[in-house]
Image (cartoon, rainbow, N blue to C red):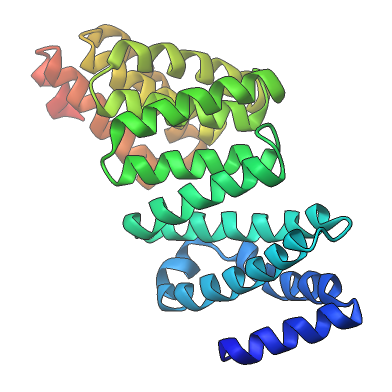
Length: 271
């Protein structure tokens, strides 16, 4: 829709007192973007720009309500901010890092202003932007934002909340990527314990975290600990998923690497 027509429609809705209703209806129609799988987003990434433009147009209408100090405009804004968060997630999915960083920076500022720093959408936006920084290679910014977001989540949502656990895992991954292995190990150990308690010892997410922890052990020179953990994981994966499952094969490869690091090449060759 041409911008002059958009302005005319918006002004007409304002005069009729229906702009808030129109925004809510538009947000509801755009809600489909929150249900798209990562595979769909990647496969149909050409449509992301169009979806982002639609979401941004709705947000501009929200800003009209704010500028005119419309009662309850913040409640109308909340689902639109959530849509903008999903656009950020989709930009990260397709690794459009330049757009993701710019979009995320504006989004975080808007969420903090409208919803407050402790709102779930604000915290999720901060996590999304931290991931954008990480993808862009801006590690110091990714670490700083991830650390402050994790501290906020632990205080507001609790140490054992799922979102707190996810943030802790993300920070551990960034630490590992920049060589801060000891700090990564501390977080991986805590998160692995949390996952085992809430999901179970043999849950796939628990096994994945323990595999990351074993990799950190190996990098830190704790090779025997790495071998023990990979061996335990491999036993569970073979029992639960079968010897030919991709996750089982990956675990087997990681165990072989740990044996090689330990100088036990004969066991690596057996695997």
